[in-house]
Length: 144
Image 1 (cartoon, rainbow, N blue to C red):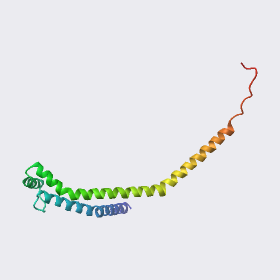
Image 2 (image 1 turned 60 degrees about the vertical axis):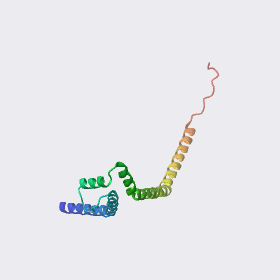
Image 3 (image 1 turned 90 degrees about the horizontal axis):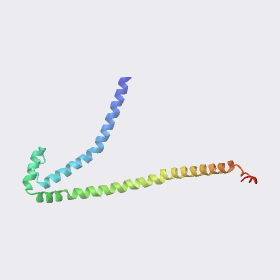
Image 4 (image 1 turned 30 degrees about the vertical axis):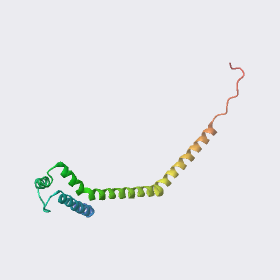
């Protein structure tokens, strides 16, 4: 029994891991390709895995001044920045559209229902308070 529980937990963990891996793998591959493009534009010659020290020394060798480095970095990342800007705008538009549809289809009817329920309860309470009010006392002529 414990073994079956452990086995089913392990299977669900593996399924979740595979789902995350399948979702993230294309994004990681795309990011890796873009990073290699940027490094190549900055002067890194080899596409083979290198140490960070070798990469930095190659970048320094091809970009002796800070101005040259900043210009090359700007040029190397231009397409990537535009692509990221475009993707962020499209994602925000998609999220906004989805939020608006969800509000119209799910939240607005609930809010309307709660509002009408609250208004009707408030009206009934006001009517009960009016009905409960004691009649006004007749004015006593002997009081000061």
